[in-house]
Length: 118
View: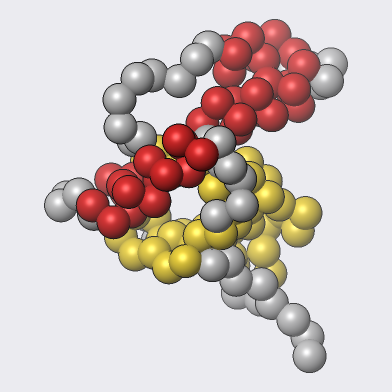
């Protein structure tokens, strides 16, 4: 978004300061709908690093994510247990780790969405 959304920045800053991964959020960014829980960047980086470390092919990339986050206000949202919504499914089904630039968010709402056959 070309005009910074102060409310979204405040939500991101609160997640960063509280070191919590319980805030559910759904955003539209670049036409994609992403839904899940926000995590502090340091927690997100640590989890991505752990996943990469456990990979035979991608282990060398884990060190990139071990660097501490930059100081200053948040510039990205870090989703944990997140899905990209596509029609009647969420990709991946089990949830993934997504990083979304706050400036790319065109719409958002508190809470996450899930589909049910009921």
